Length: 120
Image (tube, rainbow, N blue to C red; front, side, top):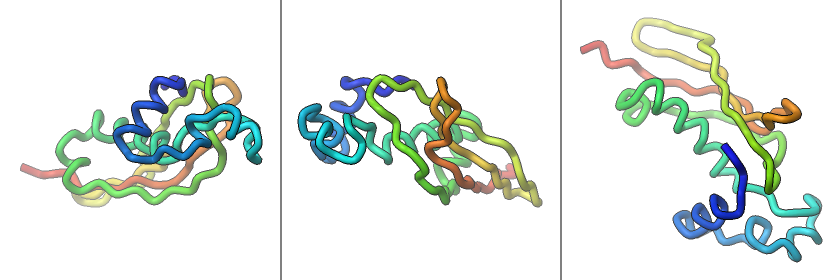
């Protein structure tokens, strides 16, 4: 996923998170980040999108995330999600998941995702 201004503007409008750190280059330049960064919850939503793509309704109905934010996605970055099955027991599955910068490999979010698989 590309972290571009159009995506940030759309997310700000939909979420109501209009923090200038995500929208105003002059303000963002004065922060510890030195420039515009993507919304943390936007980058986390990419993980949920990946899980929904893989598990559909089971994810939407029973999915849970437990994550740690480790870095920021900057304007112009490209990020990718990843997930590895780490535990499967009966109908429950747990994955190690995350988001990383595609160019550098830097982990931006890491954690676990869990869900119950419908056996019907």
